Length: 269
Image (tube, rainbow, N blue to C red; front, side, top):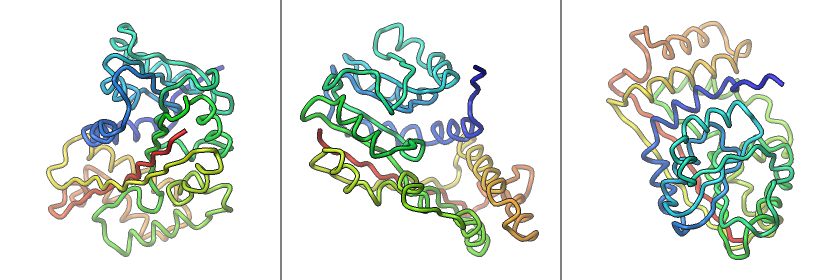
């Protein structure tokens, strides 16, 4: 089967590079011990798996994904840690995690909830493989508040209205807005002692090449998502503020602001 990286991979990588220090600090506060084994389901290109390996100098970070292309990218990124035995990559699915019951010391899931077709079942799988008393940590955003930019308010409102016009029913959006539903979903999966911490990440000029690239790709993505639902004037303005060749390129404006509201959710198995 021909397996290639998804279209969002470049955009996600740019965000990771721009906010690496913030994500590293988030992982540093989690209660795992340095010799434990922590599972990173939906590991993608291995960015968070690598941060977990830093956090576990005598343990192992286990990255799991269904995509062979992502696993190959993770293998290239983490070659040294893999050779040292601090990272292990596994091809697998959260529908049935390839681990025995109660054999994992912790699970760290980052920005993956919306990718699971049966989210309650995935959470039960996390609970099944975790040792009693161990910690599940989930880092997520709420799609409405995931990215905040200093763009013209009228344009932002028009784009957001076009982006969120068709929201669907609860089964289709609980992953996209996971922090709102976390207490119920985790309790139903058998977890206790839930804690939610809201972490606001911000950047102001100068923001650096990685964040400039991310904003460029993000605004291009929004233009594609809202194509046909924005009027011609709004479409042209969105293209202009997302074009690095334009004088109005958003990250290079004196009043530029970037924000991302992250939610760190922990619970005990």
